[in-house]
Image 1 (cartoon, helix red, strand yellow):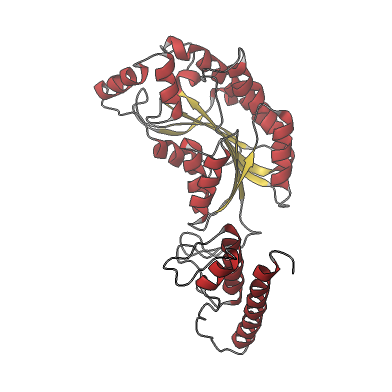
Image 2 (cartoon, rainbow, N blue to C red):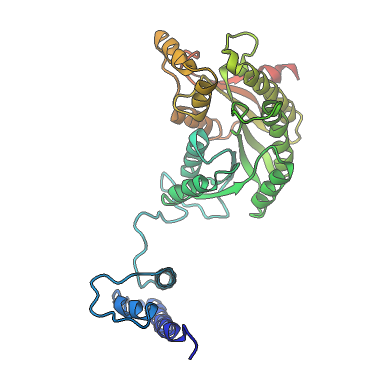
Length: 366
């Protein structure tokens, strides 16, 4: 007998027994009857005996469980759940039940795409869009484990969400991201341009202009064919970038503000020239407290974020939070706005009061 054959046969016998139980459970369900929850047939000590041959095992107070046994138990539970033998996890919300009691199937869900959705404002936007009934796709640059954690956390609430690894400065990655979203067969209803950069210490020269300018247009070009008529496009920026040249700014943020101001104009020209027209909204906020951008600003210029907080406290307008910005983004697309160019200001810091649906200056010049 070959090594390992003795260990596989009991697993096969247990698998055959489980399949018989599943078929019986399905027959009972069709007949309107219900089976009691079965007791696991294979003893843990028996598995321990199989996986450690040649030793004296019994009695053993706590048998070891190897990866092979864990995989077997995972398949066993998954098969049993599909047949109705075991209860499903209670924290999983039934797919299709949206807030307010509405029932929507997977094919009927509108699609939302978010760039840079693995953490911070992007992750909060994904969570709110999923709660509003959207099937959400987001991209991340390289933090795969963090993206998987975000997806797992949101799926536990019943969210329809997928992550895609795509650096928006890489045209090939962006094209693959758009192709993966297009495989669903449904167009994109909401596109949120959240990803930005340029403050990283290892950023090469010209990186801020590329990621905040040309990369944003590359994302629009890649998803242009997927955008549905009347789709909503949201561009996130800072008040220092939106009002660049008319507002004081820290020296460490001057180049970033200039690149994002240029990117806003590039995105605006693309959206206003598109046929059929879309609803383009620019969400403007002051420095968002607790975000990676605030930490990077402190690395470039120590104490910059503290100075911004003190100035906001003197104006009796605390800095905006991640949730406040995400809520404003979602309110800009639910319900959908009529085609046009808008600016929404998030209250906090240099922005004394929130302003919604203000006409964008670029829209009046077209």
